[in-house]
Image (tube, rainbow, N blue to C red; front, side):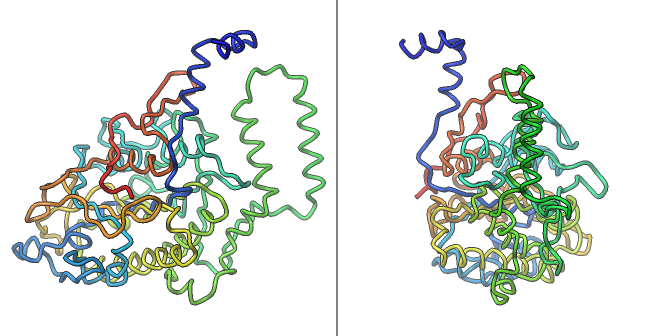
Length: 435
């Protein structure tokens, strides 16, 4: 009562006090950082994590299963390095959702836990926020680093289409949108010139400009900072932050380690993500496609694309990441999530042996950051068509990630119109996979 009385005295009402208490809610954090490796387009669970060697040929496909470091658990033969890391991971084989098979709706559901109730469309300002936006809001970095980074693409909903939903802050406001890195980290001249002062600007001159703007704004009566104020402060912090400039210096890494991650845009993006998280960024989302149809959307030539390009790159990058984080003593506090928007059809189609969209059953790989090691959660049926044990929804997965980051999934935040909205109301943390 004293707290409420004092708050009323200084101009805060009881609803505002209760709102502040709600937004301060926290959980014990198992992870300090999170890397989401999003296999945009829908990776084939049957040809990666959940092989069905006893199924008919038109279902089991061309790849052989190989043993992993966990007895009785098998991966595709084209994931040999990652198979040796399974003892560090949890594999969920019973993911499913009922969202339309269009990429935009499924991507949005996979990354936020919400169903937008539509077939497609681009990102909108009233979308529910992504994990990085909420984490940046509730657990801002302790250093002058962006809270949330998206790289190396703003993935389009089809070539030339709008940006996919699920990667942005939505109703939390644009100042919680990710810091976006769109340059290829594998390029010899990779860097972020926007973080470099021009030839006529010194740190002292920049500081003088900042103080001048502050003085000009002092006469304006404001109850709260605007989005422009927040963006301006964030820009100054990043421009004057040596931590961010150092984090993007991939040339600091040993050549042998860079080679192990893979000398391609995705392998080097994952290495860059590790450096950003080490420097203090809370969440990095790496979207593995310039557009929804470019990589993992294997309607045609599924086995050719997986064998020649996609699986070798994924195998090298993720296995090296897990080894690297473990060697640096960071895996325990860094959550790694490898997921997609859905899986692929059990039955192979006639388009040069492709597989089509399949949201009724797929797989997700998790490691570190409070996740149980060497464990398989759930199972699919004999042909990988439906969950047969412990079905898991995207909302359950998102709730689990929030829990690992110390954020209650039922946290209530307020949009720009001061409407209360729950971050992830539909999901329940998967207690069986938490360590």
